[in-house]
Length: 130
Image (cartoon, rainbow, N blue to C red; front, top):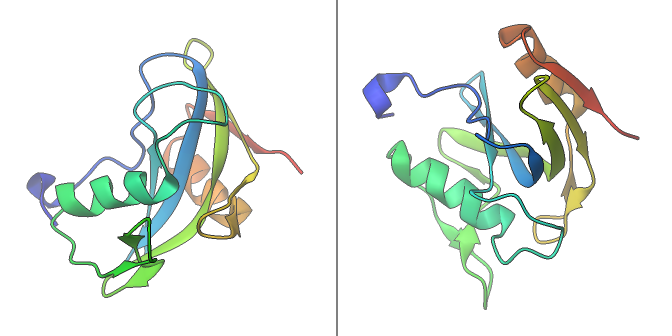
């Protein structure tokens, strides 16, 4: 991995809003990544695009899947997409509420992964909506 071999655990958005999010494991380390802009559910940015950006920035090799929308495979050598969905982020109060799923990857938010992030970043109040 690059970014000095120690990427940040979560790339919390600078502004409050609704974001697409992906949950990734690299080895046993959890990572949380968000879409680049706050949006409603109909954004053009895909969960696959968010995952691809993370993998490219960290020089993690991946293969593509899909016919029209070529996105990284859910699991590759050294990484695994373990959850994806939406998140309401309140940056002022450091709160985040995770919900929904990724239509493209057919995967939901992973509560265990959120719990791992919560342990690593206790200053954030994280919840998973059912």
